[in-house]
Image: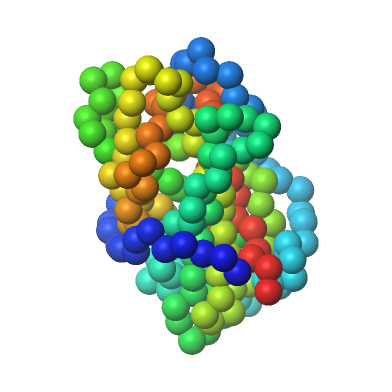
Length: 200
């Protein structure tokens, strides 16, 4: 599996789900972000992670490290990028990791929205996953970049709370990837998707 590590860290925190701000930039966007929609049950993608049984404990923040992959521009939406957010089970036991993680982008203090961009969540991942020791599962972050000449805001780090946990993990944000702030938009171009199983 291709991974490019940008940074790994831990931090404590909690997330508030916020809607995102208006923009004239055109880009595909998810359905309204709050509350998180219930996705239909789906099997694990690629066979790398099995459905979790009722007896499998959920992965906690202490069980995981977070890796941020290389941004890739969408073919059908110039200016919009997908970034893999990968969680690795660092323990010697299997745990369950499924749902939509909380994700905050932290950066300069924006005059209108402040220093934290709470990304809306889209529940489009698998319903249940088991993540054996040493393996991974990922969610995709989609972000919309500013139009040329538009206001630029570049996060310095990303903090994420795995589903079912209350403590955060932190990873460095790419310094060459600005994000368009849309904190009050109904259909923003930046959001976090549900967790999917990684291919074997």
